[in-house]
Amino acid sequence: MTRTPAPLVATEETFRRVMGSLPAGVTVVTAPADDGPRGMTCSSLTSVCLEPPTLAVCLRTASSTLSAALRQGRFAVNLLHGGAERTARVFSTDVPDRFALVGWHTSGTGMPLLTADVCAYAECEVSRAVEIGDHTMVFGTVTEAGMVPGTPLVYAHRSFRSWDALPTTPERPEGDR
Image (cartoon, rainbow, N blue to C red; front, top):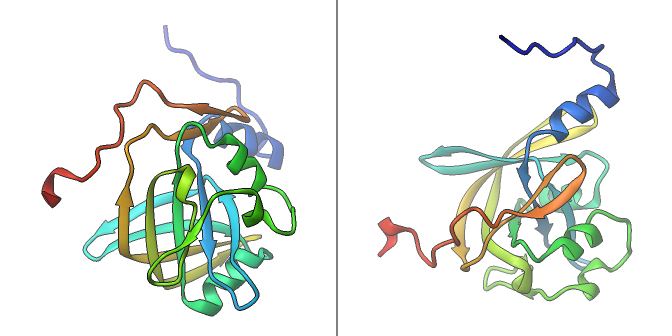
């Protein structure tokens, strides 16, 4: 017997619930700014292509993180590890100095990276930005990336979870040895 869900009108709340049923990795997108780093929690991340290595993130168009990324022409994606729920929550609020509440450092290229809370990161140069509704999809060419052993933090059904069923992130990809 086939299970067919009852159709719902595509309201904002219905769409939020439908998309919320899809587990997503949790990231904090960061960008340098003249008056201090900017950052926001983001679960809308996807790889786009391998050549050149490109990813895309969707950020609120009104966010200061998006403004900084576009102004500077670069940003970083910090993929949070399973124990970093607090950091995900901090960067999903309007707390003025979020970076004072977490461990971070400036990379050799000047990018703010969340040192203590990542299982992987990617530094990117903005290659394109497309505004859609109240968000902007930013495409970034990956210029530097790194991984730390750990399991990722995921978000689904409006809650954070560590995805312990996954194998630990390897220190280096097999092809990079």
